[in-house]
Image (cartoon, rainbow, N blue to C red; front, side, top):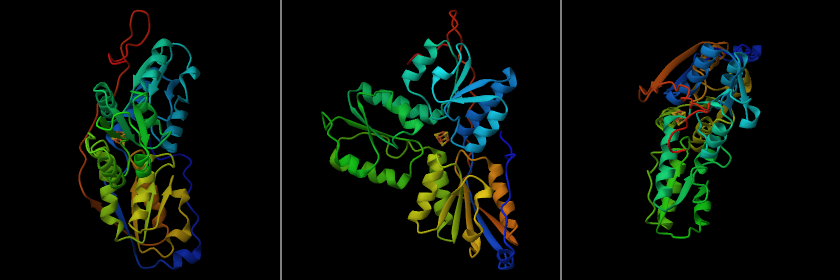
Length: 343
Ligand code: SF4
């Protein structure tokens, strides 16, 4: 598990700011927050490989979307690449938690790479749905964000039958070959409320559309959004710890904005601006599923520099989900890894 980032720098709090803050501030800590089971599993896979084999261990794309996690693993011997042609023949490559398309699997096998698949099981579930829906001859509507690693992988399961929609306007523009044969899926890290609206628009246009409702949005994304919604109305300001390319972190900020609360996405405590917090008496604090818990501790430590702080944890549910750490796939006699039968 990554620990506190080495380059953490505390913010400088002007004296005028501290003197304003003699009465205690309150921080409402949304819970659950921070790492989910899929992120912990993916990071553990790389850490285990580094411990067992030493570096370099190649990872295709960011293992999870967090700058600190990636930097921490890099210093220990992980090498992050965008594509497989950057990986030496026969080397170990880890697929990230966001999953990959069958085409990437085929390339990795053709290159004789030693594959460790850390695709989150909940992303893999969406891939399985894509294959199932495509196999029954449906047009598969994938609700998601263009270019995100997860949607790129899911689209690759049935590329000629799948269309990506990002908005209700995209739904209005759909022109499937058979409107009575529509299935839909969703990226795991979307906003539950916005996705429900898109699904409603899809069902209004195509009453026969079949799909899992908003169930593709994973438990961790859903819980973090619910936990944030539970505190949003009580806060003057919400801080969300996460990276700018972390979908579920960005969704948390957007959700706070929709609730009418000022909110900022911060990589770490060093990005807190004194003017944000100067007049805030109640600050909401949460973290996206790929943000290490230590970064939240750093934020609390920094806020304590402003004066007395009351920290109140607001837990809406307890998460007990754990996934087993993925291991390298078996190697065939020809030296190639053995992909799952579906590939
Ligand atoms: S956010 Fe959800 S889908 Fe993504 S890794 Fe975590 S549990 Fe898996």
